Amino acid sequence: MGSQEKIHQTLVETPTNAWRRLVRQGCRNGIDDHLLPQIKFSSDTSKFKYKNPKGHRSAIRISRIVSETLRLGLEDVRWFVMGDDDTFFLPDHLVRVLSKYDHNQFYYIGSSSESHLQNIKFSYEMAYGGGGFAISYPLAKALAKYKTGVYRDTQDCTVLMIGFTLAWLSLEFLSPRNPDFISLLGLLAAHPVAPLVSVHHLDVVEPIFPNVTRVQALQRLKVPINLDSAAVMQQSVCYDKTRSWTISVSWGYTVQIYSGIFSVREMEMPARTFLNWYKKADYTSFSFNTRPVSRHVCQKPFVYYLSNALYNKKTNQTASEYVQHRVSSPECKWKKENPSRIERVEVYKNTDPNLWDKPPRRNCCRVLPTKKKSTMVIDVGVCREDEAIALR
Image (cartoon, rainbow, N blue to C red):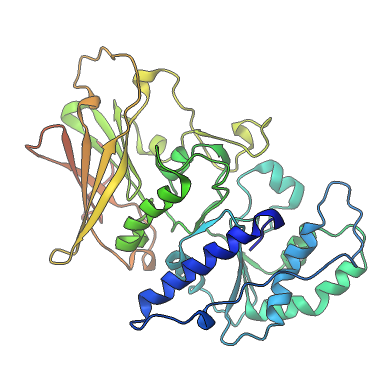
């Protein structure tokens, strides 16, 4: 885990407590502290020459963590996973992704940056940054044999060198790293059809749920993760034909209601509620399609955030509730029903732990009739035969 010295004490407490809770969930008799993973710090790298005026010496320590961990001689290790201190991992998804690959082979698994500028500077073939990357055990052994020599022979080494050293190996992709600053709503509400593995740079963005701290927001997100982790953040799009509304459901996170009919193609593009890491760069520097946030308040969606979620064992179904996030806005003079009258949305969905063992496909959602006032009821599930995500 990459971190800064000034906050390392906080980080020591956090992973230790998290690990203790994780193991206790699987052990009936609790756990002794000696069974917890040891917290260790990377070794001194001052002996390595480093003269890159635009780089950081910390890059040497970060790149050596794998080889140092390898020398600990831990048993039954399949993968080494690197991440930053401000990265939130979904362990189930991380394990699910890595299990698709033969850990006995050379694998370097990660994602390129969301920024063309970063990729041009560091290489499109490099697994990028604190969002996380994984190296198989055999690859770590092979890399450790010669990486030290590479550092000693150059005065301009950086993490870039690790990227190029591994570029010839099999490079696979996790879900994209998130752009930074402001709000992740636009990105997470239109997450691609892929398991959410990690969310990076949570310390420089707003909490993913409003009116709570970042930690409280992640604790709320853990509720749907524990119920149906495979479905978290997966987007479904459906329409209320009678009221001419477009509904986007990001399960376990948010529901958005748009007044008007918008294509699925438009809905699956993230709205630009975020900025590029390079503040002077515009949206054309992103490596994926985005759409602008409407400046007209009457064209913006009504947003409903997750408030609670439950699981019914008898029906194998989850019930999640989303409550409208109210913001001050002028009254829109529509000639059709106003979505603001919907105060809460109920979403029912059958769990599907084997979702990612199938070819990736969006779920379908359907607006159900209800007599509940100020409430919309939605069913989310596998698309039925001949069912398409389109206005009928």
